[in-house]
Length: 315
Image 1 (cartoon, one colour):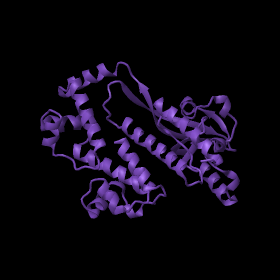
Image 2 (cartoon, rainbow, N blue to C red):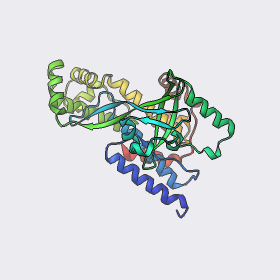
Image 3 (cartoon, rainbow, N blue to C red):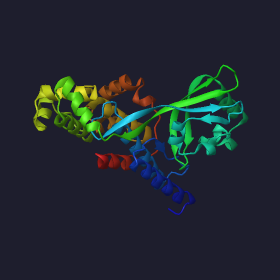
Image 4 (cartoon, rainbow, N blue to C red):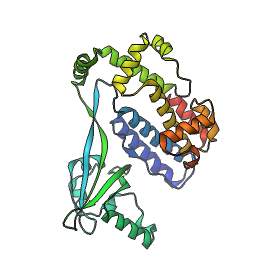
């Protein structure tokens, strides 16, 4: 615990948690080369941010007090030397800088890149990517030294000199009048009331908290929440744009993906830990969801016990 990196990572986690408390789940903490308890905590905090982001920014999240907006485009205009010639307000909000801090500086200054360790060939490849019309994944460093990972569109303008680099990311926005708006909307469309929205949110939360358990039948689930099976199925599909069974399956697979990527737990164990009765069924569902089998996903080095205990605590 006395390693020099420990204090730095603790400060980063504090900043990260403060950002999450403000409703900003876009950041990630850069990992260090050390493999110890602190790095395990860093990975778990990053995972927590990802999970909260998935929940909060679900396409049909039912929360009458909070809505979300999609930042349509965080945009940088780069000159021929890859220096920032102009930047829009959304990009400044996401990264936490003033325009005076960013203008006329190389875009590399705001990316998580160690140019000193890159070979001449790697630098040439990076330059080529910044000059080509394509989608590339970049890790931006915020003012608070956290990481925002984004799939960026890079394209040259017609003059052949300036380059546009842009990306889209979700941001939270509190809406005080959303409660009334939701009530009016649901009443007009399906005669759902505000209490129905809250009920469906409870069902949604229950499913997320019990992903390792078999999903009850719709009839049993309806009885558990004091409604009927038709209203439960219709209401859940209306608010979340998917069926209960499909939502349950996709969330289990996303959690399994995270466990495969971040731990060395055997694949067969992961399948059972996420409620699948056999590995072949799990592998088939996994490949259908993600386009590749569990064995094709890279494995992580995080101790499985830490991750599993964290998943239990989060549930």
